[in-house]
Length: 423
Image 1: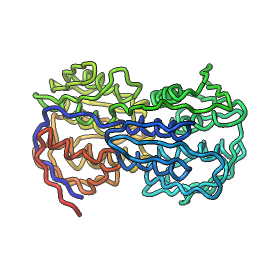
Image 2: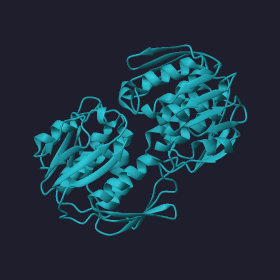
Image 3: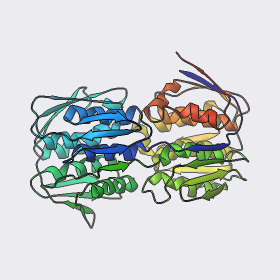
Image 4: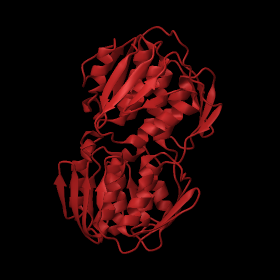
């Protein structure tokens, strides 16, 4: 799909879609529970459907009904090989690999796109050390065989928080008690907190100690009869940043101010840039001002880097983004993709091993770019049209379906002039 966006600032009001990060966690807890439950999730996406499909492969019965999922839990003792289609969803694979091992038997994960290339170490080695058999990394289908054994687990704190979450989902299912120790500085801690919140709401006890979690074994999941995926700060950030690029501004509704999602930090960062930010109980409004370059530590907010880089191009002066090296193992090498796409649109920036230095000059030129199979790159390029003198054409724009299928429809709602051409 090719989308061409004409220059022009976005303005108006749009509702944040359901958080896929939250939805993954709620669906997993519901599928592991004792009784059926309903997960209200007003929108879906390829990643959310990947988790639902894998849970179906594990034995749950999940149906999509009236903007929600009705989940009938996994029945223990299922025999035979489980085929689990995780598509391109890294969250799905990393969350459910330890769970599949905990359930015992053999499972096969079918991965697409760049996902087979994305590393599973050091989670891989921890599973091997605790009784599991695993296929070679990089193969698809990737097979695993349990049962997983309780015990002491150790992970570096600066690798994917998804590894931590996967073990936190799995370890309560084991007969014995376990500990999970994180070494070094912990990055993306808000995502771990989101997992702990979902576990707590499902009746699972996790005791946090100094640099470790103690997880009692033999627990039973008891998800609420109904729960709701909250609004997605990660995707809403594209609209909030777009609001900072214009005088009329953008309001995004369906956003909880008490959310544990780390990308809620976008509001503070936009204030630092110089935008005018107004927060209500369930909405945020942002409009532009005199934007100036800032320093951004992306260790806890890697998903915000692409769209914040657009704001940095609109600002005056230098913006330095650091601690974003994990973006190199996303759907694309996301650091390289941000650099290539924004440079092609006229940005003056330097690529560094863990981020960028962006020399902001108040705007961009425009041009034709490729999304590189990455949903956040496609959305970044589209928002960048707001500060371009000429149109922006995004090739491979169908990548947005991974997390935000209605992105371009919502962009039109905010006044964008765009043309969509299907391949």
